[in-house]
Amino acid sequence: MKIKPFLILIPLLVVWGSKAQNNKFQVGIGYQRTWLLDNQASPLKYQSSEKTFLLGYTHTGNTGKFDARLNGAWGNFFPTGFYNRKMYDPGYNPDGTPKSDSGLILGTLYNARIDIGYAWKVNSGYSVIDNKKLESRNYAGASLSNQLFYSDNIVRNAWMNSSSLNAEFQHDAQYNARHTINIKISIPIFARNTRLPYHNSVSSPDGSSHIQTIFKQGSRMAWFGNFQSIRLEAGYDYAVNKMFGIGIHYFGQWLHYNYEKPISLFQNNIGITASIK
Image (tube, one colour):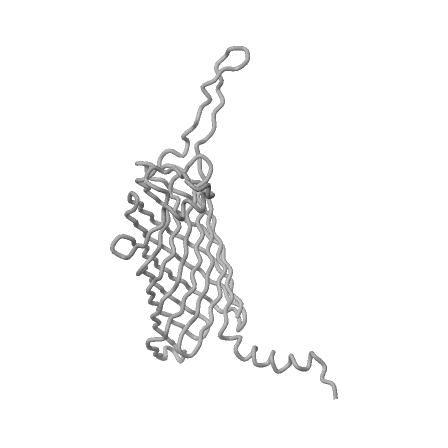
C-alpha cells in the first residue's frame, strides 16, 4: 500500500503546530537618533536622524530562550548645529563671472547590527491580581554581536566594525496572557574592533583591496576596560490573539572605544513591532 506524501506531512505539521506557540517572528520599523564624537576624524560632534528596521526570531523553551535579531538604520549625518553648512565652488563661469554654485555638506550614516544569543531561565514566579495571573521570569545568558558604522558621501568619520561576546540579563513579565513587558541589558566582555588607522588613510603594500587592508591593519582585540558598548532594551507587547501581536520597543546604547583615538557614541531608538507566533 502506497502512502501519499501529504499524509506523511500531517503528523509533522501537528508536532510543529504544538510547538509553534514557543516561536515568535518579529518585524518592526522605527526612528533613531545618534550622537557621535570621533576624535580621530574631527573635533566636532556629529548627529544623525535615522530610519530603522528590525527582523527578529525568538524561541522560548522550558529552560531558556534563543534570540536572533537583525537591525538596520540609515539617515543624514552632520555636525551638531551646522546642518546648513554649505560647500561653494570658487571657480568662474565662461563669461568670467564668479560661480555661485553651492550644496549642503551632508553625509549619510549607515548602522547595522546582528545579535544571536541564548539565555537560561534563572528563576520564575507568579501572583494573582484581580483574578488574573501575573507571571515573571529572569534570564541570564550570552550573545554574539556584530555592529557596523559606516558614513558615506562627503563625511568620512565614525567608520567602525565591532564583533563582541556579550553578557546579558533579561526580565520578562506577562499579565493575563495578553500583556508582556521585557527589559534586557547587554554588556560586552571581549570584542574584536576594526577602525581606520590614526591618519584615516588606507595603503596596502601587497595590492589588497581597501576593505581587506582595513581589517588587516585596523583590527585589534578589546575588552571592557577599553571598550564599552552598554545596551538597554525595553518593550511592551500586546497579544491581539494567540497568533498575532503588536508592540512598542525602545533601544539605547552608549559606546566608547579608545583606539586609535577615542570614539564615543550615544543612541536612542523607538519603534513599533508586529509579531507572529
